[in-house]
Amino acid sequence: MKILAYDPAFRTVEGLESVVSSRWPDRIEACDFLVFTCALNDANRHMLNDESLAMASDGLRVVNVARGPLIEESALVRALESGKVHSAALDVFEIEPLPGDSPLRRFGQCIFGSHNGSNTADAVERASRKAVDQLFRFLGLS
Image 1 (cartoon, rainbow, N blue to C red):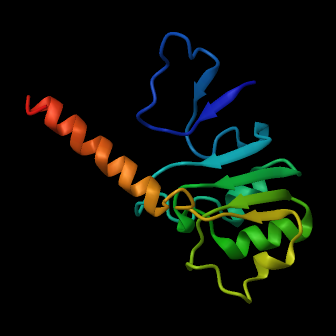
Image 2 (cartoon, rainbow, N blue to C red):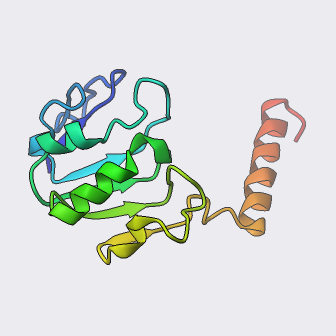
């Protein structure tokens, strides 16, 4: 698998030679999947939009597990309608929770998840306990 990393801080490291750094949206036409895992800031709000989607190859698959406003949802809807985007897997949205009348809900090729689905009471308790235990070890208190 060839991986393009759109990350200005990424540097090739030993063992990851198959990861190539690129500037967004250069080489987007070579992508079969776009997976968003970045923080949201003023520079990348709506980075996936009509303009960047026009450069992509037909049949693109989009995954966003980062922040909803990275994707301009109206552009994604148009791309799903036209077939430019084959499918989308989203656990974050521009408006959260995803409104019941969102056009994204019309598409059978979209799946939606809960961004904090693993954030159960048990999981929070275990993570908190582990963090406190590690802090105590670091401070020499355990």
